[in-house]
Length: 275
Image (cartoon, rainbow, N blue to C red):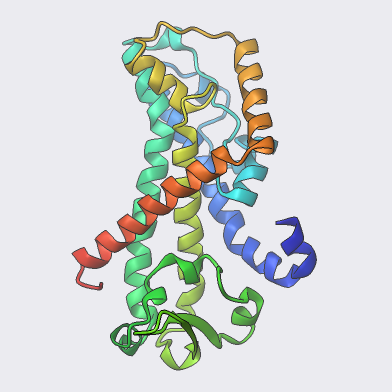
């Protein structure tokens, strides 16, 4: 990201116009979901502390938010809850823990469906009939393989897959866009879907204090593993160190998110007869 910002500041800034609102909305709704489900389960701690708010600045964690902006996975400031107020103990702890990632996955699916419909209205049908597969895949929307600044300045270039030889040809995209302004909607929807899915997958990792730890503990260990605040902080520090010295986390999450995203995009394209 830093290299991109130095080499192409305009392209980086334009990219952030799509990424920033996507990140803020994903983080905010993730945390509100935790607090609201806790409230339904009998704990009003989050409500009393003003965490059932649509103001993203009430929820942002510095490190987690930076990771969301740079790599598409991260976390927000944990919503305060008091498990002693839950009506059904372990069951409610599980529901509160799974609420955030469930919201992120629903938002990812919703954005993907919209992306499919916008895609159909953005491009001239000739694009699909001539085998321009990248017009329906996320490669183009994620700015890979293209000069993003150039595209946004003149809407001229898009990479499309050449039929028969496996190479890529450059196409004059302006001739094949029937509704050019929808490219901005499409790019935001891609960023929104990507951020929500990345946040969902990352937070399901079974490491404290991520949501996946609580889910793992409640389902497999039946709530037997009880950690104090110090243990959570040590675990988080260890995870951050591992994320910086190894690419295991990034490779795992990248593989899972691309598999799910590609599969869901293709599923909805086929479902609605747009494949």
